[in-house]
Length: 400
Image (tube, rainbow, N blue to C red):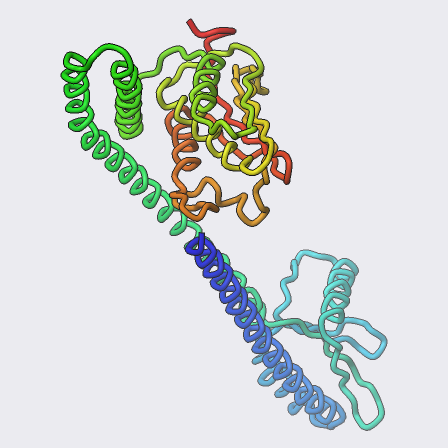
């Protein structure tokens, strides 16, 4: 559990670092945009003063020089209006040449209004007299620079998303391979000693006296069969199992009875199976493993109190008309803390001091990856926890 908390803290730290980098990039780019805008305004101020001085000059050649050689070098859109607000000239403004004069003036006035919302116009003065006003907008460089960080963030985000999806697919593929390899190897390693134990049991049964000795051998044989069942489960988890009709109600009752017989005599925990006799197509051995894992977790949650565990089986249909079977395991145990709820199905995560953190992870793999169903925590609080497994491919009211 400590490792998962460390992982969560690492993710939070990386997210915070990414947010700081994005904020810094935006701040720096906007600072550049602001500086460029200030430079453009200073430049316009110089042009305005120059125009004001030249406009009062008697030499028309100087005025023509200012407009032809100086103003023509401006790279951002400007509109010059008279003191009364009439548009006199413009530059770097897209304008349809086919427009009539009145329509042209109206269109340019709208552009002037939009420019004035962005920037305060520069007044062209001679002494205390206002000759005209210069309205201006952002240059194409400033506009591109303004959008640059957002484009960079979008491209980087898309690259990270694609990389994350690819990494997740590769990791899940590796996890499935590890699960399958580990399961097959476990089944193989269990197979030889279990077969040997069965042979020794038959030998002992032939030589043991009648009576109590035979009863002990019966119990020993039952445990050996249990080992055979475990080996079979691992074998099927590591391969593609063959699906057959399974009566989930009977399977749940069988799993509940297995735990009833093994509860301590001092235990006050009750295990009940309710609902309908619903059937599904599935791997019976693996589905029983799921039920046993869910019931075992419920028993652990009820320790130290008068436990009540209920396994409910019911049929249903989804919006597409598919037949569903819900298996709900409800207990009145201590509940799951909010910080642990999103991690309980992750491999290796356990709130128990000596837990391996594989039970619910295996259960989810069996339900979701092998049977294409869904296993989730419905709700949890002190006194009530509900975990629901939903399976499809029903075979009717009862599996034959």
